[in-house]
Image (cartoon, rainbow, N blue to C red):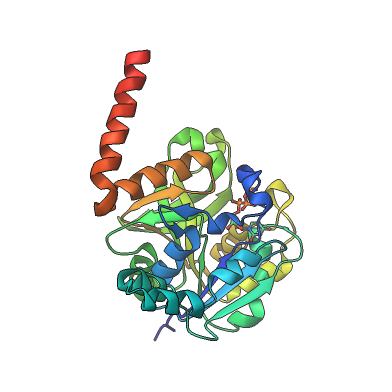
Length: 297
Ligand code: UTP
C-alpha cells in the first residue's frame, strides 16, 4: 500500500532577479494574477490534491508572504459589519488552519535542490510534493491532483512534464524517456538545462513533483551542479540509477511560467479573460489594442 502524499514543500527562497526592481521589496510569490497572489493558486491546487501540511522554504525579505497567511480578524469584522458577504467569503477561503503551515529558512540561495533539502526534518520518511508557485497551471483537474492519481498507480517519483520547443531545452530539466505510455512515461535519465543538440528529448520537467524520501538522502550527498547550484534534477537522476522508479507525467492543462515577465503577462491575460465579471470589458480592450497596433504598423 502506497503512503498518501499529505505534505508539500514550496521553495520560495529564490532571489527573483528577473522581476527586479519589484522583487527588491515584494516576494515574487505575492505578485498577483488578477486579485490573487501566485502562492494562493499553488495552495488551492495543493489542497485539492489532499495536502494537509504546507512547508515554505523562505529567505530574507519574504515577510509579506508569511503575513499573507495570517488571519485578518479586523478586516473580517469590518466586512461583516458592512454586509460585504461575498468579499468576506473570498477572504475566509484563504484562511489556513493553525499549525498547517511551517516556514524553514534557506540561509543562502544555493539552488532548488538545497531548498528542498532544507525541509528534510519536516518530511521525515514520507513521500512529499514539491510545488513551485511561479509555475501556475490552469487545468480542469488541478495538476497536482492529476499527479497524485497517477502516483497511486506507479508509486515512486513522479515529475510533471510537458513538451517544449526544441530550442528551449536549455531552460529546463529534460527527460530521457525509457518507455512512453501516453500520459505516463518511464524515465532512464534526466539532464538539467541541456543545449538543444545534447537534449535527449523535448519533454521538460516543470514545477510539480511527487518525490520519495530517498531524494532527500541523495541531496545529502550532492554537490553543486549546473549553474553552481544544488540541482533537484541531479538527486532525481540519482534515483533513476538507484531504484529505476522515476516517471514523467504529461499533465492536462496550460502552464504559465510566472517567473518570467512574458509568462506572467500571458497568465494575466488568460486569467483576466477567464473571469466572467471582467471578460467582456477586458476582451474589448484587448481587441481594440490589437487593432490599433495593426493599424500603426
Ligand atoms: P528560479 O530559477 O525561478 O529562481 O527558482 P528565482 O531566484 O526564483 O528567480 P530568478 O531566476 O532570479 O528571477 C525556481 C524556484 O526555486 C526556488 C525559487 O524561489 C523558485 O520558486 N529557489 C531557487 C529556492 O527556494 N532557493 C534557491 O536557492 C533557488
